[in-house]
Image (tube, rainbow, N blue to C red; front, side, top):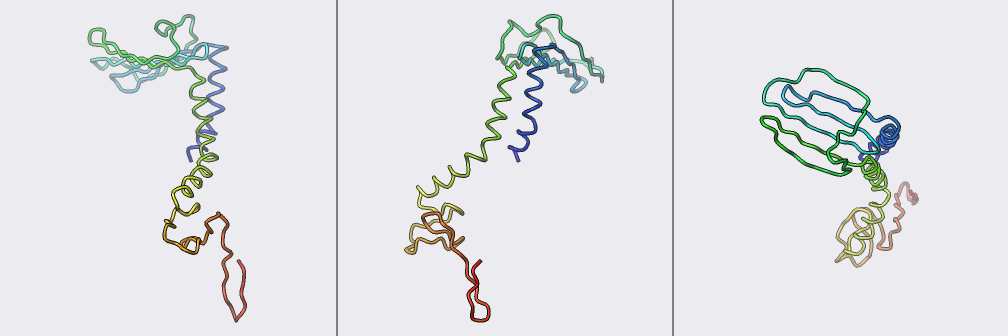
Length: 168
């Protein structure tokens, strides 16, 4: 499920990176009546500033503008900080936009790598490679749960009907 979600979000991450290079932007969202979120996209960097206010100052609005300047403190590309100015608290989260793209790409690859890795670890521990059943005392080398042989081949199930064996 995570891999499918990551695969759907990957193009959005790439397009955000491209848009931040061509047209720097600023968005403002009111989270609650006491908190506002400012999102800055510029030169492949995303800066998020959360402003906490002591009174109900924020309005229920959204704001969008192009950026004529760099609002991110010190022009940093990776930062997490919090500061207090009187009754106001400002929290900054700044990260390069390639970082979520790489993390989403790794999330897409996770199911491809996890299956063979899980089977290898199960074999090393003496478990069935398919279902994880403990085969330590099994002399036949066949899993009683799923019928897999120790070498990883599946057993053909047989059923008897009217004296004949049917292979499934």
